[in-house]
Image 1 (cartoon, helix red, strand yellow):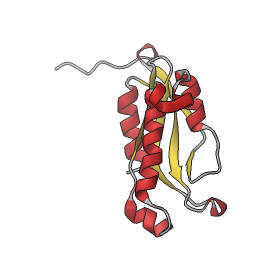
Image 2 (cartoon, one colour; image 1 turned 90 degrees about the vertical axis):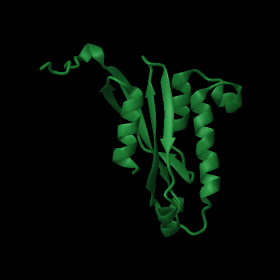
Image 3 (cartoon, rainbow, N blue to C red; image 1 turned 90 degrees about the horizontal axis):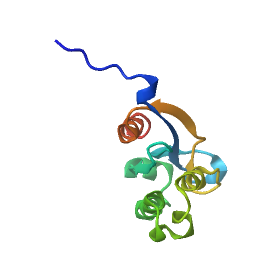
Length: 135
């Protein structure tokens, strides 16, 4: 029987992430998590994963439209991918795009403070964080 290879520090990369929140009424400071933004400089990785729970949205606010929120979050995906489709922000370097998306703002869609970590696979870590904080 062979044991799985134990990962060492050298096998891991630094990453940063922020939780994406919907804040239906900014003045009340109530929110619920809808996604995760993850960035790794070494892996040149920047992605967002999100899902809007429409029942939860309706409980928080009957005024917000889920399709409008999805359209805004889709724009975050486009900025993560980079390039001209993301407008001026999409043309920025990868770290600058992450910092712009994770910046503190007083809007309906906000991100948490950023958190660092180490992982072997940023895509797998994004999926795990999404399960832990959103689903």
